[in-house]
Length: 349
Image (cartoon, rainbow, N blue to C red; front, side):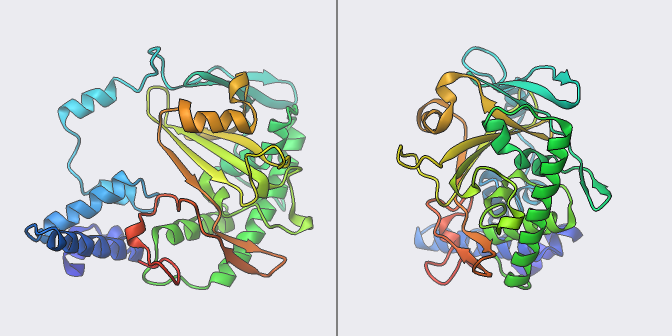
């Protein structure tokens, strides 16, 4: 199988240990499943195609882009349906962004319609300046640095955004470096979750373009000198809404802090929103009354919004106080099929 994969894949994918290890394991599982079900054993080519389809349909961040190259293009009917755009029951795109409202000395105000809810927030930009060096393509970090301020209804001026973004970046980088040192070098056989974690850690350390879902591992269990948010991230539920542009489908990722509870007695719990639209990230807060607060998003999650949700809970976070990383059992380990995980002793493929 390994020889087939290396010959079938392009040089970049063939040199990716994670891609090759995943594909070998997925092909082995396909052959084992056929044997257990009394089906004819798949050819190596069929098993490879099955592995690629699984990676794409599961939406693995570290694999789906690579795997999509080896699948046949969509049928004419599917392409026509996709071209017609994704619409709500009212015939409108699922996500609509209105023209930004520019403000003197402050971040432009933005308004979004997401399905049947209206949200407002700020276009907080993409630049972070650290030690006199400006890093671009940092919109995910900038947006996350001011989530608490947006939830509290603060008016964001550029000075506040710049100061918060720098503090958050220092916290993320410090935590990423400590976690990377603790974890050591990656194994040649790693899980999808571990590969995503390492990618997010590397992106933070190198200040390259970030995935907003890096908040699954970063921003919590920080020492006092690195704290940047007035609201603790351990009690935060972060809802990330992703749409390529108007007319495209919508994906929603919900990151739930380890101390978050949807109960009246847990008054520290809070819900924040972040949108990724046209490859740009911005913080939001709901204007529609029934989507406000913890109860509003819980209703949306369970009943109203009929698009894919992926819920994840931080399970590998570096704790500065304990000087170690801790794992926490996820209610649902996002995007990782259980049959690829061992029951005990970690989750190696």
